[in-house]
Image 1 (cartoon, helix red, strand yellow):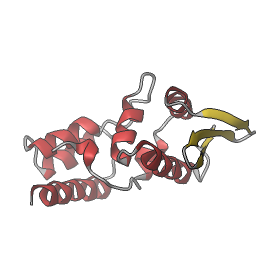
Image 2 (cartoon, rainbow, N blue to C red; image 1 turned 90 degrees about the horizontal axis):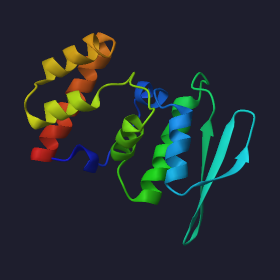
Image 3 (cartoon, rainbow, N blue to C red; image 1 turned 30 degrees about the vertical axis):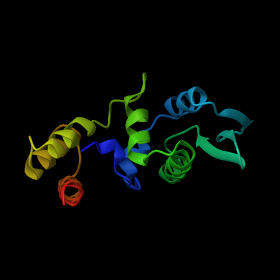
Length: 153
């Protein structure tokens, strides 16, 4: 199973908050988006589509309270424009050159999905190596197991 093909909405505020504004802007520039407006709080990017214009806003500071919300909006728009899953786009952003390595979940989730790890191993990794709270790590491990099992069914 290819994790990047799962159609899921990314709502994890830690993952969304880990995206560096510079990395997101580099990604948009490489994907053909153009800056249409620079504001005090961030940058508006647009891309011409066959049937209109797509617009996203990238805040320039991850400490803004609505930063994860803006990243959710960004992933939603990119998934529609690119015809890819939010997980695939998130993985590309996390793996981009210069991206923060503070969110190290991809490899662990892939091990779980491949069957080499169980949910307890994933939860322990998230707590120990990624600094997650125990309840969050357990919840994430349970979610990934459910997704894996649904995909296998």
